[in-house]
Length: 172
Image (cartoon, rainbow, N blue to C red; front, side, top):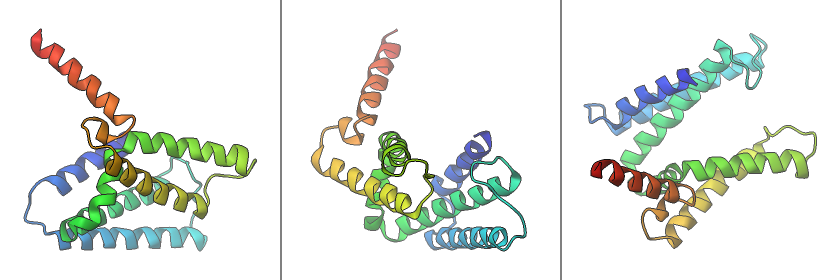
């Protein structure tokens, strides 16, 4: 987790800090990382080396890091070029705690109830998680208009608690 936290910190600084790097350059860099991830998984599939999901090996970490960087850069570049198209991504990002909890619940439900004994790594689950997350986040934002509750079912109470605790610290 420290490895991915470090990548997240570096990406956040690179993506969010105003720089001379254009949105198109970010998008292009993200596509390049995505292609590197495709080559990496292609080498794995060709038998050049083995990777197992959830293993903490440099091969798995490299692949995961390439995907994280690719997705972040493509999303940031595309959001800058097409801001209205970024609304679903921004809505999902604002509800990440709620969506993560629901995704874990869904995957548990899938392997316990819908497909007992199967693994959770199916393309159907990818589609359900991505489209379901986008639909839920956009629907929540369309219905709930009052802050901090607009942030999400779990994010709202957390934000309210932080606000309350912050006020108490300022008074003290």
